[in-house]
Image (cartoon, rainbow, N blue to C red; front, side):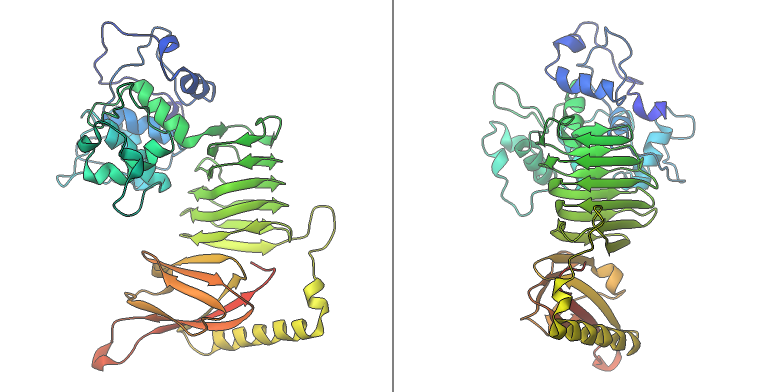
Length: 425
């Protein structure tokens, strides 16, 4: 929708004097964003130094991330007919804007640089854990950075998403300008793929040291090395994304893309993360492809498929009768586990890989701890609401989720059956 892509200066003061786009420090990012239809300046004389309010920045952020699904409940101070009415409904549906205690969002309030960083990076979960922020230490105004923004500002500075000033400052409290916002969002989202087709090594100039954001539904990445995340946006609804001989040293992040299928041929990905609340994410891979980790925040289906050349998946391990008998035995145990009661579930994890499961999906009760009854087969750990399973060697193990005692101090723990396998996801 043009309204989502055009970043207009509605309700903003226009300086009488100022530089032009051609004079901007962010000229490269502005030109690339204009070519992708993400920003549409009002004229050639548009002043890129114009300060932004909350509404203008949120419209821009929605556009760069391909967000378009809108919530039904509006905010008190953004009624229907307001210039930013739809933009704030989209932000609310996505979950990065919830409003202030009085039910308002203050769309005309100026937005600081650190506020813009937090709004942008929290969507993609770029956040420094802990309380040590090394990228901020060299800044001469490091003391001005608010505590609530430091985890995100540290990432923005270290990744080069936010521009610094010649005097060594980041000026976190200064109102963000249009050119600074384009610079931030263009670097955060990286290269945008807006048309169906193949993106080859030649087209992408080989190695991409940034993220890549998909707006198109039928895309093949071929012979690429991506040093960043592949972001599959809301625009890729019912999409089919193919990776051929491609390496992603980061995540495939699926955000609200409806039913989408991702197929890997001779490719490697560090992690697949699903935040797709509007459909099923299906990941298919051949036996030569590797996925280091899965983070299942929403439904994920995993398949192993034949290689495109027509060769079958490597079944050499099954040619060994003992291995075949072990596989059949584990399968029968899994079936028995499924039938033994409502509190028994079977999950599969690969040797040498990790699988992340949200505790909220595993149990409706609070989890105090996890007990691993097969430590030689896998490692089970809790990580901020996530159960992390790491496969060590083939076999079947049990993991117990420890809940608070029920009535009469009776234990109400939940037991999970874990089958650790090789060659199957």
